[in-house]
Amino acid sequence: MLRGFFEGLLAMPRLMRVMRSQPDVWSSFLDLTLKRTLVVLLLAGPFIGARIDELRAGPEDWWQWLVSFGPPLIIAQWIVVAFTREYDDRISDSLARRAGIPPEDAEPPTTPPRTRFDWKWVKKRMRRRMQVFRAALPGFILFAMFFSFFSDDFMLRAVSSAVGALWTFYWLVVGTVSKSASGWTTEGSAPPLLFIGALSRLPLVGWIGRLWSRMAKDLFPPAEMVERHPLEFIGLTLMRLTGVVPLVGLWWRPLVPVAVSSILQPDTPKG
Image 1 (cartoon, rainbow, N blue to C red):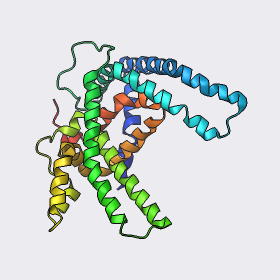
Image 2: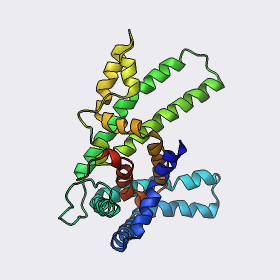
Image 3: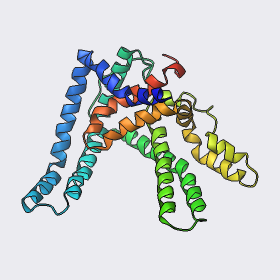
Image 4: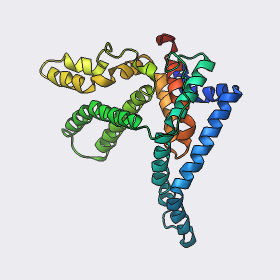
């Protein structure tokens, strides 16, 4: 049962090994990652410098001091990725073809990648996050209504927090699958999520499920893939979450869509 979980958890490290066996792809990957890391550090330099100066006085809270490095690095990283995303796509395409995994596009790209602000990508990211928000919101409302019927004590707060965390993580898993075109192969034909479909069939409250279905339908395709391979995508998402550490995400970015396709390979028609 845990085999699928570890397959997902190790999908990106395995792809990293495949990439290292391809000198040209590995060289392009290292060159891109190291250059982007340097630019991120330069952009965040003034903010980091201010934090380092606090070492002379000695921070009162060392953990808070370390966490304070995160926001400037994350913002700088997001800006750099927005300008260089095309290079990620090129590396992903080359890696997928070398590893025998269905690439994002049937035909290899013919134009060289460019460094430019990709407004289309930014709008797509914003639209996708709004879709996730719409799909997850009814669940949070239902959980809040359910727990409101119980007395407020420590155990209730703990259970409520755990349910909220699991619900948030579920949509992070769906978001991981949405990073690859292979997660959208059933777009237009994907059925409602199991729990939404079950809620829609219940008497009296079925209208809630039908309303929720309309709000979440944009994400039915990747959610269906999660239902097919839950353990694999849980493992992959846990590994991907290491990318919340500033600069680590730069190493994982080109690998995520290829890892998703590798898990869905039996379900994804080639070419």
